[in-house]
Length: 191
Image (cartoon, rainbow, N blue to C red):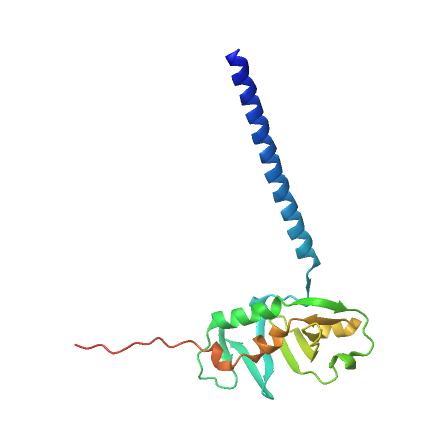
């Protein structure tokens, strides 16, 4: 009798464990599916390989800030004596290359209404293959938040993107000195 009760308990325990494993695996599968759907719904404006960039520039206080890759070293053209931190440049370019759109306006006929006739900011990037891409930022949509953007490629088909305000207000407001290699404080050594 005890053997049958023990066997019954073991079988019930196995069924419960199997059910728990099935529930956990099912939830993981649902989570992965939801993440995949979310990733698929993201519209990247114009992703590019940061390692292919040879020159980039943007506007800051009415002046053009420009960087060039010379002999595998980044140079700020406004002060060629400034030592540039390649990791800072990589971080900046990664942010720009992974820019995604909050919304997309296709076949926009009148881009003037988005402020693209007089861009508030222009970002230009050139690549090792000789190609280039220009990003023109229009006005800010204060109601939903974000700036309108059109790239060289999207201008051909009339596509306008609405992107995060932080791209213009933070990333493209980076002072050239922010790319400079930070000098280590050597301190004084007493003997």
